[in-house]
Length: 167
Length: 261
Image (cartoon, rainbow over all chains, first blue to last red; front, side, top):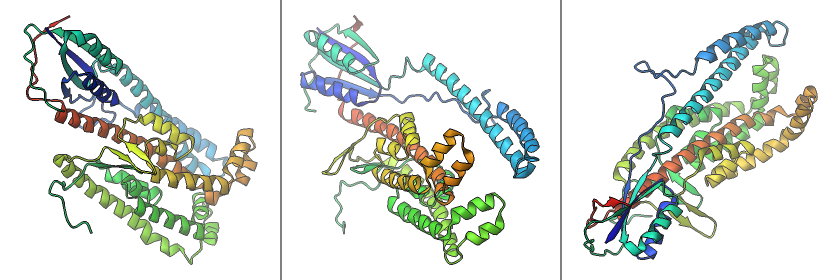
């Protein structure tokens, strides 16, 4: 009775380390499927045709207005005059607001990613077939090389030994 | 000349892992590349991995800038002191500046557009390229690099982020320039007085001609390290996916509908 392991990995050197270690120990029936991962990136800049409720300019423009006003008034005293200081104040205000919104959105996005992607971000499916007595070693190797998930399945029929190909 | 082509050789390559860095084609925004050339001639070319052209333009701008005291003139102009700006500029050299400056911007834009096309062709051809390189000088291999780590190192001392992602040539340039700028502009002394709250003294010790080089180099290395770390990580994933597909999808492998235990 044979065993088939199904496991998921992220792309890294660990996948190759796992495969090479299995091969070293005469577990040669390995099947790998790299996945195309769906991107979870939320659009940060809205377009004319679509908006996702994320805006990076709301707070920025308010702060630009406040910074501009303060800058202009300070400019009457400072060297460069009201125009320069007004522009500087507006730019700084906008930048502060923009960064605030950006960080807020990145945190939000990160939380979303934690909920949805973090648990399912398998990038490679690795299927390993072995004899029952090799199963503990294979399982240990998969987990030891940072598999995200491992499932062990018992084959119902005796494995028809595939022709060994030299890999 | 390399006139005799092996028939297995491909036409375009997506990437090339050399001992001095991983050279990689990827889609770029030509406008962003051109804007980095505006910040400092040569930066656009360095972003496109055209290091020799980039260095030539960089040192050319650096030389003329020193000769004409352009940075000082820029400082006076921003402060509205046009008379001083005129006085400080060296008219013997300043006309040399304009054509090469514009050329750097135009050429980096044009090259970015071209390389985007070549990238598409290379991506479709999907040719094999070396993913590992060892020589007496260095060792380099494809690896996943964390962009934020590259960014943080680049923020400490320019060039460290580039060393982290193994962009040796760019790192050497930024390291050498950073050291020169820090020494000649008395930046450390200036920072010292700044932190002590003695702003007039801080302003007095800092040399504007040298210090004005710093912002563009500082932000450029951050950008260069971060974006290339992102692209290197993507390259690693693609390369590994291709490798797995090629080597670990044997025809005779049979999937069994086994029971999970």
